Length: 534
Image (tube, rainbow, N blue to C red; front, top):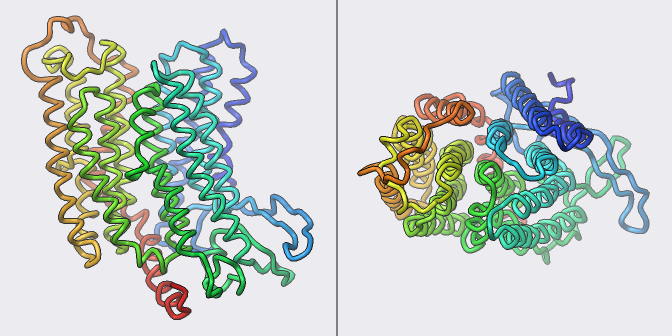
């Protein structure tokens, strides 16, 4: 498998699908939908093949030998001038225990979202072209190991998501799309500036002994590769590493979204079509926390150690603020949107612990939240397609009228609450165990447990208002789930239950990489401290 470019196929297969759709007549709506479903289905199969061939014992942070399915060749080679030298950029892909769960998550959510898009009836050809382009951008972020390539995929997502919300969204779609675009672009500028600073602060030694500036993330993570005079070099007493870390963190935090950069999310969710809400919450939010773990932590380990308390603080704020905001909502979709903000706070809290248990819990929470929140937004879409309203006070007694639907809702709600036996429990438990095990984050972890109580309150209250009590006569003719809706919800439910009962396969997948990351950050922090760089 290491000789087969599986990561390129995973990443660019949707582009092939996009080209096929582009040449199909717009009147052949079923062919367009089936083509997209086949392409995303093949991508899902490839992600499972990747998982089956993954070496669970290999782990590392900046050692190329610790990454698997590596594809690397010179992509851009421009003769330089003066002190800049030649500009060399690699096409460099690879996965480890941090990225592989998110590659699998992206493939699952995209396939489910394709099924959810089956009832799109406006500009179908344009919708699925944008959908497939978005798929490539998402997958590329999780497999890129060159910062320049990472940034291209990161920015590639902006265009299709802007149009998917702005054209196929709700009544305030233009406002929501522009707000999403501007917030994300604002964060991207910070990432771009830090990327350029890192490029001119680190050098890679080529086979012939020549030294060139580099975007190679694994090279940049090694402090021995920094130039003495680079502005982000720890060897430079006047370095700007703290400012760069904060700028990079803000760029990624907007995507999470972390308080106070969260306000774009509820608007985007409410106005986006159901399938795009599923992708937005299931995959896009995870890119922010993935970026922090993949880029910020290993490149700036000494600052990560120093600011871990502040990361935990913002995680706690996300958890409690998001839960309180969710409790105040009357719009079903907006409630789920704010619950996503709250649950991403658990990821921040686990990451801030800087120990194996906390970071493992954070990565597992990224995967589990992706599947649970996908279920929740699909559930909202199902009822909205029938009732054409998301007003929680307009329902009541649907449990009698739609028993199968109510069963899936109950599983999703209790998984979001963190009920033992469902996937949300084990990831949140590991996050809290990690936070309690770290002296830096213990108090904030204790305060954050309030989020569990608040989460139970708004979820159970919603369950009561919508599904219990006397049936509202207005909804006595609502049909239960269709075959397509079963096909969307059953796989996600199976994953939620399986990982709730037996999370070991997913934890084993990430264990070696997480252990290496924790060890790397601690060792590097000692090294950087000896340079008096912070």
